Image (cartoon, rainbow over the protein chains, first blue to last red):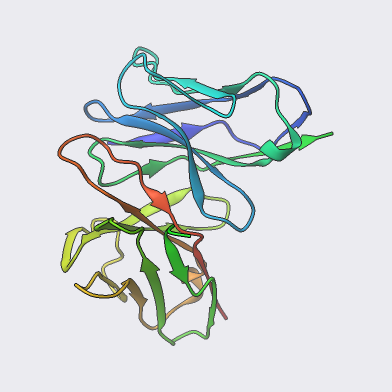
Length: 111
Length: 116
């Protein structure tokens, strides 16, 4: 079946710290992988995506590399800001119809 | 703002009442998806619709839940005889499918349903 496992939170970091949020997946076939971000009271916004093995998605200083051999898509940022405080969801879709989401990781960045 | 619109943003219903949640997709998008987010959980797929067709409803509970996307107007998620366990955030997403590939889904702000 298809599923996504995310690192549990909450995660609290100081401003300018390095961020890693782990994400591993199980899937049939060759899924596309995504990171979405959810700010309080809002819907999900696409942060980045990768559609095939070894692709690197990047946006706003965040990066994630599609690793087929380890079935992982870990999210990283070199220097977090207070404005990055949000809930981050890893997701996959094998077909483009259904998306499968992880449970989310809450990040709080303190000044 | 041409994003995905959902209304109402907050909905309170007593047990046994009906809840109707509306979703207007982004302009030019003809594919709509509904997800449910329970407290402290990720989003769970419910249903995928195109205009006048249900494509995949494998995530919909078998009873009390229905969805439609008519030729004109918004997509509607309908929950009959609501129970406390239906309290959740319901998100709608839309996409513009191209042949093959996995199109990005654009999400609305959600409807937070509270059943008292």
